[in-house]
Image (cartoon, rainbow, N blue to C red; front, side, top):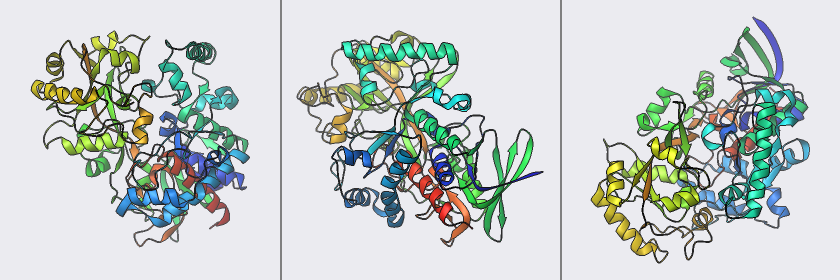
Length: 561
């Protein structure tokens, strides 16, 4: 068996792993990144790319200045018994340092999301802007040959392979038939994309999670990080209770990698680990994850083999997201995350009994949690998003994009159900028609006045941001009374997992006695979520992943074994 040496071995190439690798390398350490798949990026590359980063320097430069006590208070109230003071403090302290480090020292640059609100606007300490950032768009040509080793975007969330970024970019695409400025923006973007497909056989305008991974890969390569794909961590090397490397399984055979400082586990959590999911996920047999298939719990098993423990005492074991199953013309099927349209005016979510069960404009995690709680035991965990054709043509419905793109193929495939009347729609969906008609009668009565007394849609800054400001008086509420009527079936899904290895504020994996295991760190979803299984804001997966990866890399450089 070949034997190699390095200072740090990082297992996984998503945000957490690459953040740790770049940070450690910048501090002068020799770093190897081992990625299981033949491409880099993990689930991060399929993500929206937003990071929750309170107190970040971009917000400060825009005049949004707040004390650390504000986000701390917010998290304390939202997380409740899951509030881990030491780790929360470590996160909030390191976030601005992480952003500054990458901005000043690497190819990773950011854009601000200063209008993005925290999810629970009535909770003390909630932010109304300045806590969200995203990687700036990146030209994939800057990666050189590395572009061939970068994961392609998720088919369901792109337009012919072109990623679209939430914010002004998405707004332009949503208004392409309504604004000359939007049309020009879309034409330029799409024209460039067509050229890229012809020349490079993939989109080169990297945005969202792909931009984050692309910029991190560029930074890693610039710093001499040894990036290895198709290299699976088979087992850890442990000597005297300390982790000192790992055995990597590669197409060329096994390699023993010995580390002088330590190993970082960042392999993507356990969204495709059937055994662990079955023990932790509610209605696991009805769950559809959006994580990459290679996220099978390797990091958690490796951590446990060295004495680490998995924290399952979280509010939810996964980062829930409502999804619909998409039948593609080529016979394949996809999973579409319902992020955008639920908060728009003129759509509601109902169960099989025809009744609403939540504020549809709240967070995607909350929508699934409410669905799981509302569906009686023994019944299929599912809901239906119900709207009019006019709504779909304006805002889209699931993967069926708005005008000018056609909706008919999705009706023909059965993805979208149609009814000239509410009763016909209910029959097409298998929804109780009496229940649905009663629900819509009651909803429409108040919606005509812009009100939603049952669930208070439009009552928080987060709701209103998700809505349509042009819809008065409530950006989130409009009647559903002019057919034909459309519906799409929505099932419980997830972006990833929250349960993970117990760690301390330095990202060190803890033993059963809560002692740090020398030489072993975890970041990303291999680490138990610092949010304790709650979802207080968009970006609470990638923000902590980047931050604790940064913390791990810095700690490895200053505390060698």
